[in-house]
Length: 335
Image 1: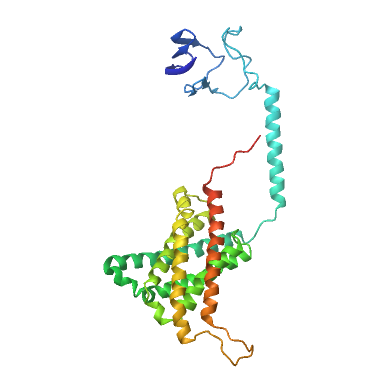
Image 2: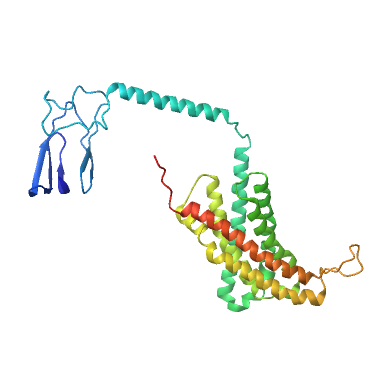
């Protein structure tokens, strides 16, 4: 029987099914009277080629035969690929118990970390604090944008800088966490992101008052905050073994437009600061000095621009691999 529909199934009675057979549409019917009582609700699964019916015994014990009548019905044939007798079942149960014991032995050999819960609590609190900080930044900037419009671009630094200083200073712990093995994040991408942001925040914006009123500050802070709104809660839930699929998708997708935009905004900020550093001579090393060399800070910034785009490429490649790992198609294991 194939292409079954209008299936009527009654346990301890008969099964009625209509489908295509060798002679066209027919009603097929058979009846099996089991040796002992079974559960009244069997599980049925229909495919285009076959109909599978799983019937559960009421009591878990071995039967001498399947039906009450001693002689097997002519239409009934055993599937020896799935056949299991009492000795096979005992052997299978024994193998499962041995596997469980071996697993327990292996787990007992692994030394337990006495600070496991303390580390987990620290990581949860760290990600929670960062999430709250960047949430405050994002909400504050969004509300000001709706109320003041473009005028909010020019005083973003004076309104948001204290919280951004706090969050980005705290972000230095991400390098430490990776360095001592608290998290599995690679060290190099963490260093590139944290020091890149802090260079722009503390060296460029923090020391030049002329840069603090530039509209580019708004875009830098906004792109940073949106990215972290999904990254930190994802890590926080991961610490307690929870994976929320929409959040996972956002964590590994939102960065695709935001990361290049953030890097571009940082580059614009550096380009705008070069004439100011050239005029003021701030951070430039002139003669005489112990090194007996002249180092112009604007030249350093030009070199840093190249490093910035290299850093964007390194982190983009790292994040793409992570996205492919978490959201890509799962590879099937070959048996």
